[in-house]
Image (cartoon, rainbow, N blue to C red; front, side, top):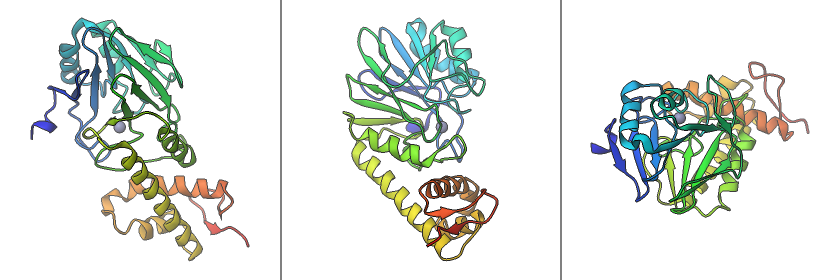
Length: 273
Ligand SMILES: [Zn+2]
């Protein structure tokens, strides 16, 4: 099981290495992937949790060549290690905004680039899982670092209010226009067939949305009722997680005038007419 080893750098491509953090779980799969891009000058993508052993492994791998620390978004399994890694390396911390105890040295947004001697990383704003989510495209290798926008081995949770289903689907569709040869996710292994994965995600979401709409139209009028019916195929321990996505779909359907409901704890009804 070498692939699930933590604290060890594994080559993903000629320019990219991966160190997995020791934080496996329901939301993190085998753990958070921290990527090191470049050899002479190194950009770290998602330092992960503030775990001394993990950050030591990352620092040992990149040494004093680590120039940048990029975060995809400010959730607890991706960004908290940034400050301690900056202390170890003196690297510049980059991210979309200051939030969740994360403060970048420089804010970056859609289209901004990190230029190194050997590579260029371009930020792609992908709101949906988190409003401040950025993916990074390694243009030389056409590899997309997708954070939690796309994962390997599970689907992504969209939790309102910061999570937004309509934004998420738009962000997924927008990726289709980019020259992406592979996806390096925040959790799981390299995805070699990006367009198939993106289409799989879009199909999955539209099937769930259809089932949620069907449930409401059949008279299921609470979020928990919809979860029980639509996620009958999913282990019950995952239902609290699925609940977030049901809420996100209901809010999207309401914005589109297809269902009505005042608040997520109240009753949900089909649109009139
Ligand atoms: Zn994550």
